[in-house]
Length: 102
Image (tube, rainbow, N blue to C red; front, side):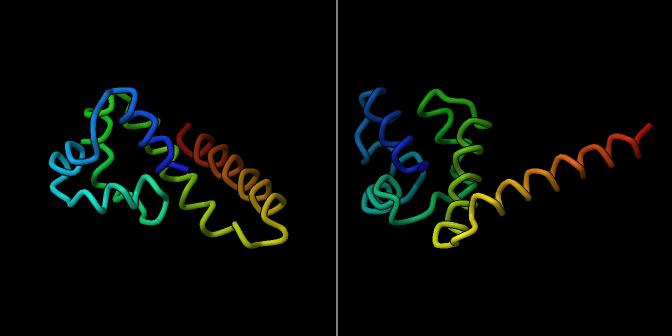
């Protein structure tokens, strides 16, 4: 989960939640809830977080997207199969788009 990743990175940098909150212009309680996976991270905060925590924005975005997907499938019996099917559809769409640009 992205909250756990953000906490790990923050602690590695020696920062406190108050410092992150100040940079994001949010309150400390919100940062605490993000790190505890109680509140979602706003996509608009990813760029600032990537700079603050010295991680690529793309890496944070991967975690952010994974959280969104997990929230949709977490209680579904066929989650793994559905994710595999979605991956197949995604790869097929990339191939179709690639062929269409030639």
